[in-house]
Image (tube, rainbow, N blue to C red; front, side, top):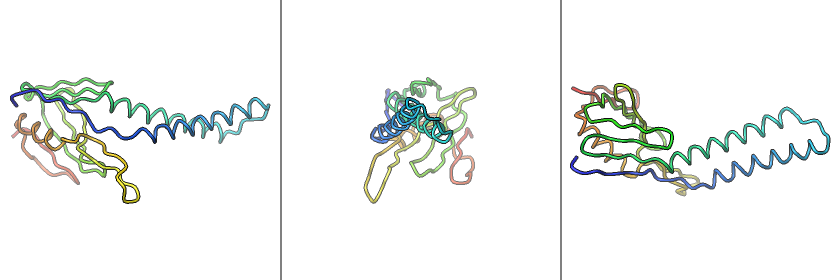
Length: 168
């Protein structure tokens, strides 16, 4: 690798996040109205509102992390940042890579001795024969090949639906 290349993942539409927050707010509003009327709050209603709020918050966190994710390949190694993690590994520090096929692209685990990170190659979300969104890194396969090549890793053994790469 002779120069620095920074990559960002594809971002899924935020419509699902807004729908999740809308449902959570409706559930909380219904509970608030019942409380204001002096009615006893049903346990199932409280649990449903809590679950919807937790789900919406989880979706928002995932979207926030995607928007802050960057994977940088440079002559000395690789750096992965996503808002919560910041991992830098030199090519010599990378011990192994595991690649698993999933319905949303390939899941790539890069591991050093003390740290590591996970990214996905490009995956597509389809509904009713219509492309609804893309997730993962558009150039994920190129990133994977560069990591394997620059770190000097070779396929070691196949596992279930994936591959495992390590130093020879």
